[in-house]
Length: 454
Image (tube, rainbow, N blue to C red):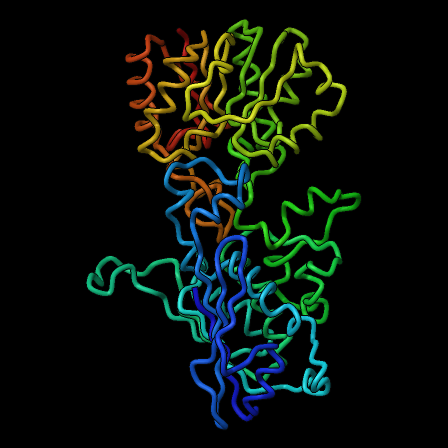
């Protein structure tokens, strides 16, 4: 991924001092996820351009993300992160140009406050909101925005445009302000969770204190940290971790209200009690909404929560409280994946996949089916998933085609039932369907549930 910063009417040596780099040499800064190179493709008295090129090593990126990366097969290694300037690149800008971002220039301190004619260019920026969103975020800060959609394939114009923009910003800005705008707004364009600030030196919002409070679209960009928010919770939302955030597979979608999530959990619990389950494994338990409800039910003797994301399990621990965590005979929280055979999933009366299947790559659904229905083979399996035809009723305005940014697909009612009937037939189950929420006479309920009984 690439950023160029061009300045006119600024001596070459002074521009280099402001960015703390030498226009005559190539500077390489090693990052946990790859190598960042700073160089100057042009440097003369009329115009000086500094370039930041980030070469991402997918294997190093995967190792740095660790348990926070969702287990979606090749998506761990093959994705747009090496090419698209989103949160990962914003974190690199903040790391490489941290002294410029802080407004430091010991050799010429008076130049830090100088407004320059700047042009910033990024050839590939993910932006689901299109050119309008880019203008909405950058224009209030004094930039002239040129945002051109990148076609999916220039040779096949009928395919249309991708979600990426070639973004050019021109305006009279201080260098520190320009870098601050990029560090904070690139994640917002990419659809990352709104940032939380903690006031520390590394906090990107610390450098936005002069412009963010008055931004007309601040709600798209940042939230203040909630009262009493602990350090670990803030770290999960910090800029440098946004790209590797846990999806909390199985947790309520990002836009879903507490009432919606409670409705799903209540419907699942009602089915489990109807099936006389005494032990339950919640596969994709996320932050523990369903687990909390299960723990409050005295007839359940053994409860197991499973998630691929360590951060989600830590949130579940906080939600459930130490008293419940200290009951290992009744409650267990495990790191695991529904895509891999695991003996710990077996010997439960019931298994639940609450809003999980739609986060699995379609090509890996057979692996999940074999793990859950073939190997674990509980007496009852409960599966919930969004109804595709109800998406317009459930998607927040401007949020995209699905309830959750990590969702891989959505099934219509007919498609879900065809899948459920095939799975039941292959693995020796019967299946019935239970609506979750109001049952619309047209597309049906917003969430569909299949109850499999062996």
